[in-house]
Image 1 (spheres, one colour):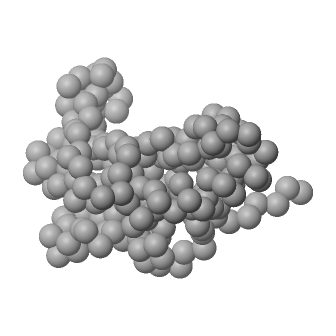
Image 2 (image 1 turned 90 degrees about the vertical axis):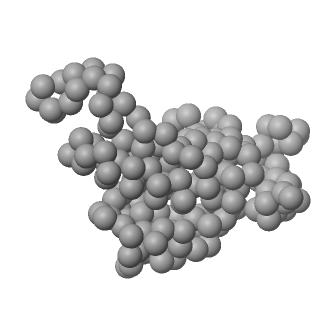
Length: 184
């Protein structure tokens, strides 16, 4: 069964983007290719139970098993050892990606206290959009009673667009609550 948001993208969003961006082919229009969720553990990386707890939380949010990332080098000033846990990440593609976007935009982001929108400055020169969330408990999949520590997470949407304006139009069509930045 295809996700609701994927059907909306193919039937409504794609034709709008093609007219706005003057695309002659539907493959020229930007689309989201993958989403990467990343949580850095910091000092909790040395505790195996906290790593497992964080991994379980991110797995329940994403609907896909999260991977524990490891340090590649030992750096004494940061108290890191090669091969030790650094954080947790998961990469979403295809149907799980569209389901995550739907839950993020319609359920999770409105649950943030004093939410004023996401900054549109998070778009890089390659058309990817990155933003951070301070509390992972905004997702309804996380059981608030079982959370040992509230963690932040970085979310990166990797798109096929080549410019910032095309990515901005794509995110607006997906109803991302972006703040308007005016140039002085």
